[in-house]
Structure formats: C-alpha cells, structure tokens
Image 1: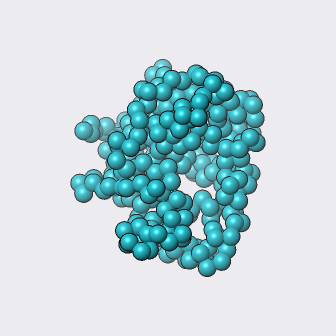
Image 2: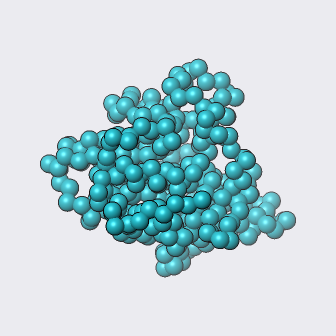
Image 3: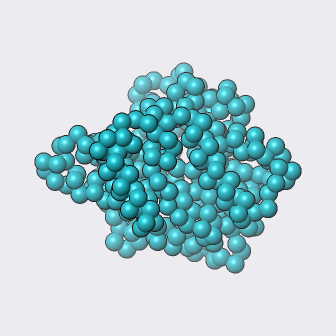
Length: 311
C-alpha cells in the first residue's frame, strides 16, 4: 500500500507515520539467520524499513530490476571516489579509514579496497543475511547493527559513507550527528537521500490522490518504485540547512538520476516504451532543475561549524 507521507510546514521534512514502524530495541542482534521465523523476518522489515535479505544468493541487489551488480558497484564507487579525489589527497599508498553505514553486503567496501590497497575498511549493517554474505563473498566482517548500537567513541574515520539508505533510518539526523562525532577533523561525510521534489514523485503523489487514477496499474507501479523504503525525505535546500545545523560544512550538494535509469536498467517499462520515455523526459527536466530523484551531499567536519541542538 502507498505509505501516507506527511510534510512538516516548519522544517520541510517529509515522513511516514512513525507509528507504522516498530522500535529498534525490539530486535536482538547476533541471531543466526536460519533461526528466524517468517514472522520475525516480517517484523525485521517493520523495524528497519527493509527486508532482511536485500540481495539474491549471489549478492546481486538489483537483479529483479534488470540491473547488473557490476554496473551498480561501478556507479556507486565512482560517485564516492570522485568526491574523495576532489576534496582529499588520497592515493593508493595513503593509509586511511572508511566506514560505510548501511553497507548491505559490503560490496562498496570491497571495490574501494581493490582500488586503495592501504585503506582500512569498516561497515555497519543491521541485516544478518547481508552480514553473512559480506563474509562469504568478500571476506569482510561487518558490525551487525545500526549507528545506535555501533560503538566507535574511541575511533575516528577519514571518510564515512551512507549510500542510498539514510531515508530508512529511524532518525536520519541522529545518524548524521553520530557520524559527525566520529569523523576526523576535515573528514568527509558522503550520503544520499531520496528527493521528494523530483517530478516523478510529485506527479505520483498527485495521481495517488485522484479516486480513479489512483487505481491505475501505472500509478501503483510509480508508487512502488518511487516511495518504497522511504521513511523520511527532505528537499535539497532543507537538507543543506539541516546538515549545516548538525555542525557539518557542506562542500557539495547535487542531485542524481533514478538508480533504475542511471545503473543501465534494460527492463521494458523502466527505460523502454512510452513509460520509459516519459520517465526519462521527467528526469531530463529534473536535471535542468537540479531536482533529480536522489540528493547527494558531501560534507566535512569542521571545528568552525557550530553544532546546534535540535528538538
């Protein structure tokens, strides 16, 4: 069903009714995936806004959408690597640390490690399925949990990434606050969040409110693709403001196309046919507006940036 989203007229935050989700304290970490009942797997989604298995047996995350794992890995790595090279002098010989939050199977950490042999990698991921696959596929041991349970008070990182899952967090701004705390001075925080101001999402909300059009298959597909796993969202200007209020200096903020367009999707109805054409036209307009489907922020911890408490 379409998640009813609300918008705060004061801060611009879009959000789903918090009562629709369970509390993270109801989850016990460290339990073997084979010991989960079907009911417990459903409850996992109610807590974390995501199914317990985010990939198939081979670790492919977008196979259902006609996107290859290799293409997805390359696109996400390029986004991160471009910003690292632009704002920090890191070479293959540099010893540096990176933490990937909500890292799924750890695929991004593996690609980064292959390109930067001296890097020290860490990852945080709540799904026991993804943690097991990270170990099996890449030999990476992840911390199973969230930033609420991740103990890193004595650790610090040169780069922290949150690539495409911040809108799932129970409190995304608490996550950003905790990330800032463990960033080194001038360390980079790179994160993405879905953009509620993209035309496809704006039109989808309008269609969903019309009695007849809301029943159309295309409307239901647009709702599923545009709003699945979306607890929170902020427009570009509001996200910049909130990030700065958390004591981070925004170095760059831009928008990116939908992943099913950017990652070489070949499915009919996504890139092909009239539906695909309409979607690409909307994305081209969004590109001109700088309001594409995803907002990407690159920020740094600066002691000159005042951390302001929010209620």
